[in-house]
Length: 127
Ligand SMILES: [Cu+2]
Image 1: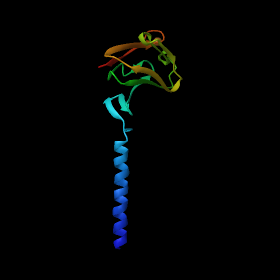
Image 2: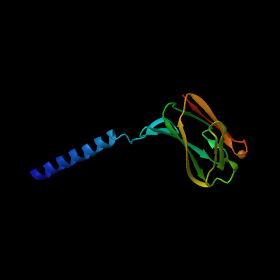
Image 3: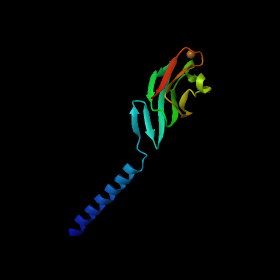
Image 4: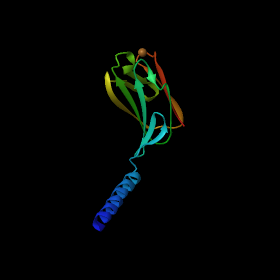
């Protein structure tokens, strides 16, 4: 009986310790905005591309390495072609999938992007 209690306490300490390590490991995503997280010091901005871009406007942090991630899911319209002229980005997305575009470290500025035809706009503001 006594050894059972001890082993339960030991297990609880082990689980607690593992949990603390996870917390301190830095790999927990930190939300910056609804569609923006920071994981391991890298900012990830997620935009859905289908019949336009959602969200149309993203707010992100300037001064940290940033990935712009486009998610498609049965996207057959021209939002599967992405352009960000100021960054020289012209990217064709798969009909379904996830595509990362490395934006490097941005200054305080707003990036304007569109679909390949210039019909659907989106923007990312770095503050
Ligand atoms: Cu278009």
